[in-house]
Length: 298
Image 1 (cartoon, rainbow, N blue to C red):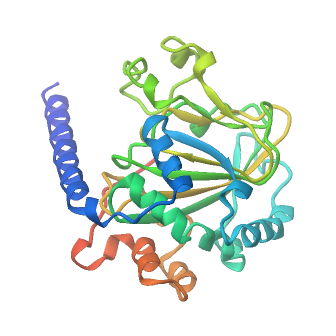
Image 2 (tube, rainbow, N blue to C red):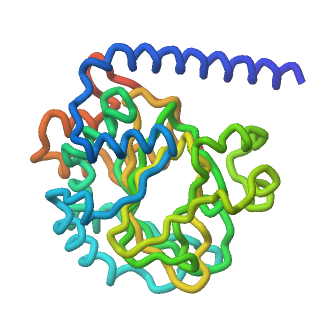
């Protein structure tokens, strides 16, 4: 009992120290934030208020959209049609495939996306790679198909891009708007929660289901909003998730640190990058800001 209490005090002290450090870095960086056009500003404001913003590749009109889609189309036919084992609920494209189609990695490094991420996070951006995944239509209500918040940093930004049409029965990304957080405050002490547990505190009519055509894009803060990938029922979902946080996160899952790339693979992918982009890719070794994150096991 005593040891548990001491661990709790130590954990809370560490979080307080991290929070104070983050607030100080926000103040230090506020005058260095890049200017935003009205479209990008609206995305940042929605993230602050709602915790998410739904748009499309067409509406964003980013320079590398066509390259992203062409590269994804080169990979999709090679993905498995069904799970390799009974309880497999998701397939992640391996790093070798993404390196052969490096436009996918480079899409997440575009300046407009960095400007949005930096303004929302409030500090220099760490680009923590991506997950190109296929969610199978099976009955596995597990892991990220349960409601959760990501604990890695004080603010997080993820960008989901749908590669196929997603309807209510093909596993849409779902989230609960930020302003309902107070009602969900009793949900603590573990990472994952079922529909029943969440519905005890908030009516399901308030859950937002992000359905949409291929090319739908969802910006969301996975730390501040409860979210999940709804279990696909009749058809699969293909999507890419791009990940951003500060360069001094609270902690990082050990299998997500450079996901899905090795250091040598990142060096290969980074040959043509600008200094700003390289600093974000190798975020843990930025000179005076060199940082060793605490790694969490799954």
